[in-house]
Length: 459
Image 1 (cartoon, rainbow, N blue to C red):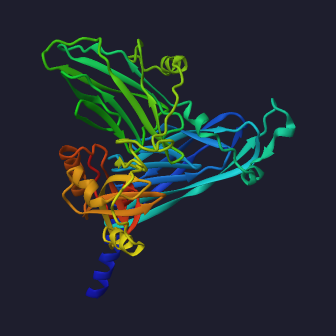
Image 2 (cartoon, one colour; image 1 turned 60 degrees about the horizontal axis):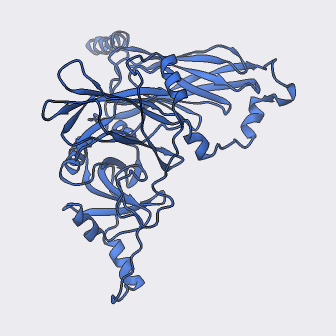
Image 3 (cartoon, helix red, strand yellow; image 1 turned 135 degrees about the vertical axis):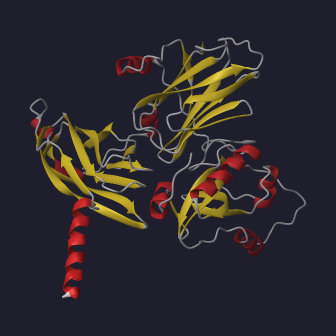
């Protein structure tokens, strides 16, 4: 009898626990059942996250012919790339119910039915879990304003070869405009506002401004960029650009002598990655008002700004003397140099192979972090090259996506790698070092590593 009551109490306890402390995560989608070709519609995802609070990601795949733009992100980073809609949280908001939303533009040539589902991945304790979103079918009503011969079923459209816009065309819509410096509300400091129209750029990007001597710079609004001021250079560095198509960052200039002037010769560039190639444009300075963030005002400023020619620092340069442009996905880019060497016996292939292998990065088990400090298309003499850059620790190299990438350290925690990266920034000429993540020797994104290890991200 006592045993029966013990079992009964345990069953009741489990039932009460499931009622009072539910741990199931649920997803619901809100989207129209029918849409018109050439129009826009909104997709809402209602997430009941319950006790989930750490790193998380929601992802959906859209058919070709549909494009997405964020509406409501609930502190997540948003990306739309290769038809994938992604919301990524380094830490979920405190609310138990979260609503995220994006709008979808439908190509005017389409008709027919398509379905969208989704996957929410999150960390529960030390386990990675996922919840599937129930599929939603949507019907596209064909447009009545275009030639019927141009209309194609969306399923057939998926089989067609997609048009690849030239890099020059994709880059032409990227603009960066600086408002002429103006006195700040307090003291003789100067406010510098910069408008970025990111166009097709979405990942790694950098603003670099040459600040006149006699002034120091400090960040005011970075839009999640890492800001540094060193050697009279102010830099905003993004691993992922903000989701909005246009945004404003700013910083404050303080005169060392207390006397400031708005007539400052500031020169700057905006660098970004497009089709795995680094593009660089000059920042245009204009007498505009960036205090008014109304979209129509910003659109007018962008439309009136001239298109800047882009420069790829990794192409068409044969003998540069130095380069600090970000190559591959970060770190100092090692320039390709050609130098005639006289009266020196060349190394045999066996000697060269032994030299290279002694610096090869060996895979480690589990998730770990390293700090990438350089990348180049040609290998360098590691010992000599990095000694000039004041690197005293062991440097290893790996070949990845057509680059020789050079990194240091091996850290089980992201915070330790972040601290080493900051130390490199402060003690060496390498201003663009960054944290790279690995899982069993394979490169993964830092976000994925944080999600697997349930670690916190630090700026």
